[in-house]
Image (cartoon, rainbow, N blue to C red; front, top):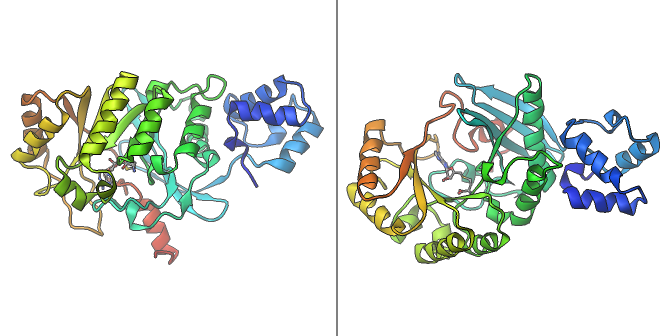
Amino acid sequence: MQSIYDLNYDQMQEFAQSCGWKSFRGHQIFQWLYRQRAASFDEMSNLSKETRELLKENFIIDPLKLVRKQVAGDGTTKFLFQTEDGALLESVLMHFDYGKSICVSSQVGCNMGCAFCASGLTKKKRNLTSGEMVAQFMNVQRELDKTGERLSHIVVMGTGEPFDNYDNVMNFLETLNHDRGMGIGARHITISTCGIVPKIREFADAHTQYNLAISLHAPNNELRDQLMPVNHAYPLEELMDALKEYSEKNNRRLTFEYILLKGVNDSKAHAKQLARLLRGYNAYVNLIPYNSVDENAFRSVSREEAMVFYDLLMKEGIRCTIRKEHGTDIDAACGQLRIKELKKRGETE
Ligand code: SAH
């Protein structure tokens, strides 16, 4: 059955109207879901029994079931969820100085096939629905409610390519961003893409104020072709063109993610090439220590080696940061907990 989390605010109003309800009814239901975080329709005590029954006939609330939780020493928590049709997906709760952030998955598996990524080890089974993405947030928020804490940030950086599931991702963010929904500020929301150019252009025209992060990982086409098959479809020139357009239309700073892979993309020449590629863009580079994945041979650079690369970029006038690692004592790399569970169930393809 459909999850009521699929409906954004306007769609909820439309549903209420289609039932012949007074206009504030849709508003009330939205409040129950996102202010009170109701997990059942019976909790919605100011709705008539009839109304609640009608909702129950049409919707479920939460389409996810928690399968497992892993807590790291630094508090980073991985949640493994199961969907109604038995698919597995992961979300991660991270604690920062500036607040609490959830990393949301956008698809079951992923077809982008990046050489270094654990998520791509299983092909995409399907897109997640908007409601399944909202539910990742709501489940983690309900956990935090127990201690009076609040999620303040969302990153769409879990398993899947958000721009390969564009409409559902936009719908889910709209609900959580809506001031009558969870009210998460647009500037506290980040979408990360491997570089699906037509969707970057569509996103540029949507003027959402969400942050955009680009998984770059290589400063030239030859290397990027090897690491990220998406580069064959949308090579660097086209990607950088679309990003220029995005910047001009939105006046927002871009983030470029760059995993430092030992002996692969971490040389002095790579740093220079990267600086040349990004010159003139309102951007900064997030250098990412690699989380090793058993199934491949890539290794991370050391902290010292990362610092050398960082210094080179800074000297070239490119702003950058080195991402602090979170939850390294659990299966932290994207998709690893899911893959472990699939193996246990004998379901790996
Ligand atoms: N498909 C989207 C979002 C999911 S991946 C994208 O490509 O951006 C989120 C980020 O994690 C990407 O930058 C991805 O390249 C990076 N990533 C994937 N596997 C990783 C690993 N093992 N260690 C560190 N970062 C990884």
